[in-house]
Image (tube, rainbow, N blue to C red; front, side, top):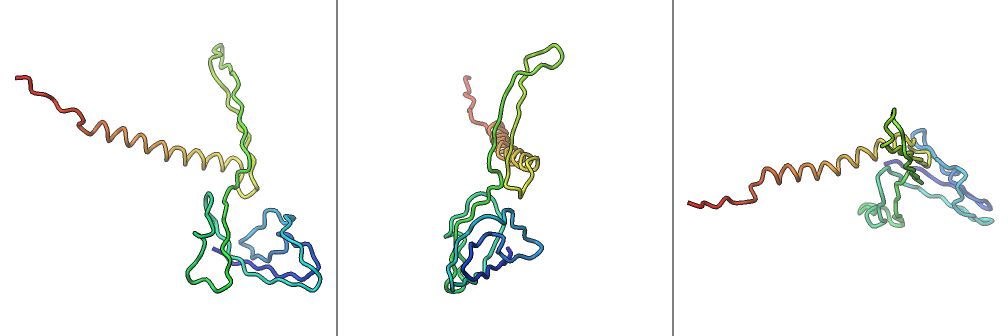
Length: 150
């Protein structure tokens, strides 16, 4: 969790690049338009930023000890912006019974596509391991009772 600040005076078009950060925080898209502030107006805001995964609604971002006037907002942690895939027939030696998978992964720059693919593969493996463990439990559990026919 980090604290960043925004301190602007109008008239101005305010962009993400106007946010004051320390060396640990990088504004990925400094040209991103935030709002327009009018003549004679000013805004000073303290922002709390965090890292995470997936979507977090505003009510889960609220803190009980937050000062009066604090606005909790939704958080969305989705560095992957688009994924395309293509499956084509492939030949290995004289055998043409293979497929070639081509992935196109686009990100917002906070993660490189190779790392996004690796993380996705790890998450998928962890989820699939749940099924493997269930299979092992089912095998170890004696479901059928043997009937004594004597």
